[in-house]
Length: 339
Image (tube, rainbow, N blue to C red; front, side, top):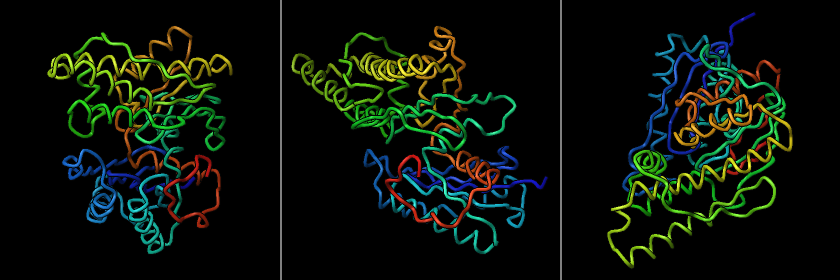
């Protein structure tokens, strides 16, 4: 069988990423972040798209060079169609289609959220692959979902946030506490040095859905109330606040996941998305795995946050499945999960 060599391109937000995979194995995985957003405390869409334009050629060139291949050896190019920032998506999709046309090879559109789930299927001797069916808790800055995965391309979101995502809740807390952008990893770092001393109310939402807006508000009111007594309260208790708030978010995420796994009788449990890099979330998955007899799956750190290897592996499986290409190449900011 002829080798399948895929170039993956990811540009959904503020990371310009390119990766080369050969038969599902990663030969290179290059990510260029955008430091410019730090001064604004969050991603500025216009600046993000401009930065992608500047970085995409050198990032792709470096990915191909690092992989030790020639462009003429590529079987196909996979790119993120959505969801994400439209300006950023346009840069990646336009480049992918232009390069694919010049090389005369297929261009494969990829759903960013499906790619987070399928990152578990990147070939790696050190990584176990989930068995079907499995549940995947996918948490990021823009999404919080419980996904029922029956096959590589038969998935359904059976629980999701009705307002804010878990990643956004982490980032807004960091900003409130004066921590630098990106805030989620900083909260995790501070929490590792703190203790769970403060209680935050658990949101009440029916079924497997989530809501994180109330948690953000409760943190805001808590700090305001305490700082009326001691203006220096947040600084003095920063690590314990982070530990308590992080614990509340992770406990809430697993409350719904445990309920879902029990009701559906599924013991294959995975996590994915940027927030799956959170140390407490990863530790709790392993703890609950032992408690409930789950088989648990955690991606390597570099495949949790936005990266192009996960885009490439989706392209790999689409080629194996013989899916048709070329009809859905227009980037879409609000792409539904099964589109």
